[in-house]
Length: 378
Ligand code: ACO
Image (cartoon, rainbow, N blue to C red; front, top):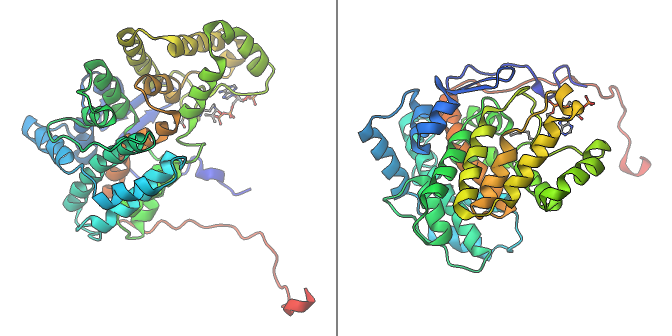
């Protein structure tokens, strides 16, 4: 076993974008408590905050919002590529491929040194990733993609491109808060992957593709999909107790969306997402999945096993219900995470630019002194 398996506890950078205190359930973006941002901020304001360590003035905010919306369109060739893919291609594979392809159409793709141009490029990519996600949702249903509107915020534009209708306020608020809450989270695996790529002097698109690739793994971005599958499997509130008894008490399985490597108390994002999931349930009149999620969380909170191990719902638990209530297929959950986390990835990329090559060591534990054997004698 490596001395620091998983690099756990190893500090690899000084950052100003976010701070996490897992024992206190505290998350801060550039000085602001996540609760304060979730209550007040648009995703675009958070992007500006992560890039500049301060909130934007009105004119700066409007410039950033319109820069994202105005450049969110994707080349026809990228749309055609997506339309040519098998409909059962995992949405994260589609997103990864489409973002990689976008670099061929970005005149500034190979500029590797100018931080202001890197910011402009990542704003472009942020909008384009939203368009790719919405377009893929329509393509799999055999529908034509819809082009983004320059007058909308990123959350509004996604919902508009998904349905073609003017988005409803509760849905926009829920999606905006989801994007705010998932935007940044310290030196997580996908962020680290983006930084490693950047430190080689490679380009923004490559770094974001690396982030997407790392997020695709079930140990990172996939837990809310698993949580939703679990709620669907449970099916009714009445089945929560027997399901818990058969699957969790028996020690056969874990509750997906509960427990966290860092948070050993409430994940501050979970309660905020729950409130927005409640608002969505109230506006749609459908609370089946929320009711199951709440009942299961309450069952776990009353159970000694969960109490003793400080296991609480994490960000994935209620975000599963929120995204499902917005009409997203489970396969789209991780792409939505990426649509938000590009904020953190790009802020880290910009800060890593020009930095030292990241090159850890490995202890060699293999054989030595072996003698060459001709191929037919092995
Ligand atoms: N359900 C049941 N038991 C659990 C759960 C759970 N969700 N999570 C942890 N435990 C138990 C473990 O079985 C272990 O019990 P033991 O001490 O008797 O062996 C104990 O709690 C500690 O578990 P670890 O896996 O060692 O804790 P760790 O901090 O490494 O795990 C993790 C965190 C991987 C997230 C875990 O809680 C888990 O598997 N949760 C479910 C999956 C999930 O929600 N992942 C998303 C994480 S958030 C994110 O990545 C954005």
